[in-house]
Length: 388
Image 1 (cartoon, rainbow, N blue to C red):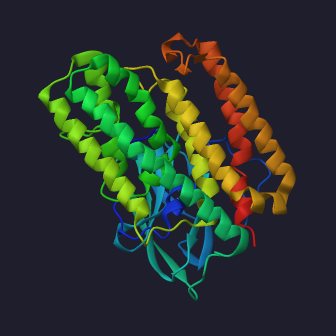
Image 2 (spheres, rainbow, N blue to C red):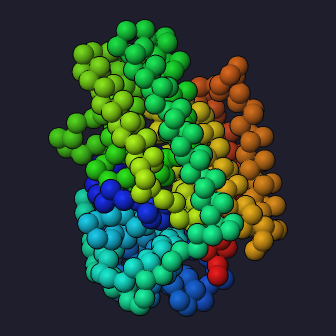
Image 3 (tube, rainbow, N blue to C red):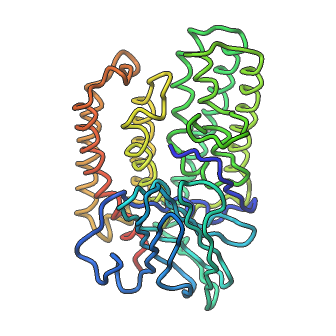
């Protein structure tokens, strides 16, 4: 995943939690658009470069706003929308040069927000004020929308409930210097986190990077914590007393995540659940397929499978809404999920998967093409669900 250490600050309330993960596919610019910016006439286009962040408009009415972000620079970038207190209202990450991404954000309250392009995916980025006017609006929380939100919330809770004891056992093995056991538990403890990555990404105080930052994404002087710091110690450098401290911090961080999703004010915007589904597929396409995520353990296929499961569950949560509005899209999504699952079965080994360094480049490309085909369909789900 993209685990850059830039702050994802926000308020404790997460009423718009999944608005922070409303991602769509990392595809080249679409041809069938209504204007030169690559989006519908009502969309706000964002021209991002290495030193600029130009929006076609800086005002909108309350309700859903659609941003079409094009990266015209040389660095990978990302785009954020912030609310009061730097609460993340929406984000798209890993926008490679020459690519375009779409972000749908529910801005239900009038006021002044901020947009930010982050070339290189670091720092506070290039910020602009964004004004929202009109009466406060209520996102649909009844009927199928409530069922979708409740279903996905139950799933998130089930994953965090399983994450805590899994990490406890993993950290205990690390502290006991039982390297074979710790190595075996490393990928199995991560799957619960990988299934709900977008949820963690939307919490403040750098919670997601604390849990899952990669060595390559560390800023100068930043303390390395989380799963991947322990991964390197297990497979490369050896366990030390410092590793034990990292384990304690990891335990505290996953408990913080669990407490967050169980907080009384935790809520899920059903129109954004599909954004999370797309975000998980983007994680696969950007860092999992390349083998960058698990650089030392080569357990990437565990992550890929977990991301896929989380994405499929998110889509399933909104499926009644999708079937009512575009049943054919739902069928295409089902088929694409089946295609990717069939490919993954080729790499099963016992209760897990083969080491990813045994997967050849042509095989990785085959898997990448299947993920891209799935992503192309899932990228349409959020827009359909958000339709009035």
